[in-house]
Image (cartoon, rainbow, N blue to C red; front, side, top):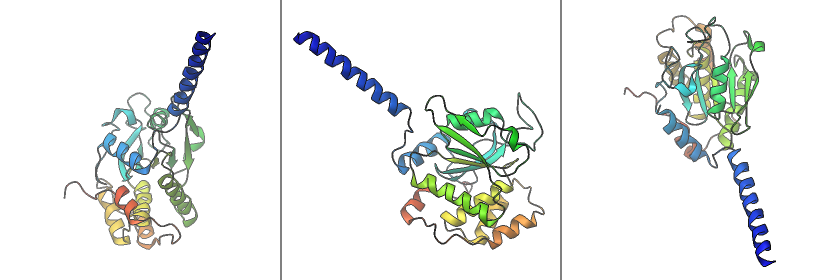
Length: 250
């Protein structure tokens, strides 16, 4: 009887351990903001704002194929770029489109919590929720223009939520090329969370358009006149951890 009891007890213990580790493996690996920052910082290797993770043709980091001109905004929190449609190797289509399916799947596999399309063209044809089969987490594909204070507020709240919840993966903000509208949103995020002045943010926007910055006076004016939301603050310690260096060439 004693031997049978021991076997039964051991079997129950093994089942409990399997159950426990199964639950853990289905959850995010991050239990602190430091873990999340370090993981993505080391994984992508881009230390400064101007460094690209994927290039203009969508190459440079296979696990993020489907993105284009991807750069860091805040380490482990927010990234910017475009959608790789026109240069896509197997599913080429017009540039004016949301992320291709493999781009969404890859962001999900990289444990991003959200991707935000900054235009509306053909958004209705894209998948809006992508389940990560390894973790059962959901990538939410949202549409937010960020072209007025109301939608900017939603964007700032999304970013703040990822900062304050270590278990939530980063957000990918994208336009078509990864230059103009994503640059505008990045400028706003840097003014809100990294204390960039309007002049500094405008300089950042210009320097990260790959030279395509003639005109766009409405975007430039928007950046010049943006006022941070006073009720969303970041302590200096967190700020020092998530705000990247500006230019790797300096």
